[in-house]
Amino acid sequence: MVIVGCGRIGAHVARHLAAAGHALCVVDQDPGSFRRLGEHFPGQSVVGTGFDEAVLRLAQVDRADAVAVLTNVDATNFMVARAVGELFGVARVSVRVNDPEFGPIFREMGLHIIDVPDLVLAGVTEVLAGQG
Image (cartoon, rainbow, N blue to C red; front, side, top):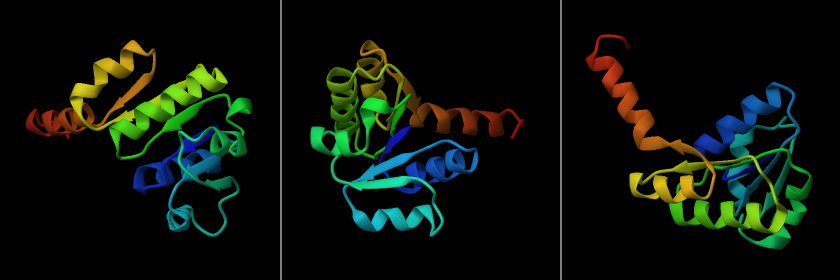
């Protein structure tokens, strides 16, 4: 699996998937972001932008079963998802959506959406209903 974006969320997901035994490569344009993975992270890391074809080749996207695009910039996530699907034919792509207006666009592309605003709304609604 390839994870694009090694911020707090991307690193958290990468650490948990690695602990579960998944082979991972994490891509981020900031080399300092990989410190979030910890000293003993068993996966690979590639420095670069996730919509750069050469970077995606280094990350071996062509061999990936799935890609998770988890940056905090929706436009970047859109470009990465298009590159992964169109250039490499990866069928299983999960994309973080920060602005609710982007959700329908990503869904039309056939992407699995991780809708941050809806997740936050669901958590708040649970608390209001006395379930959280």
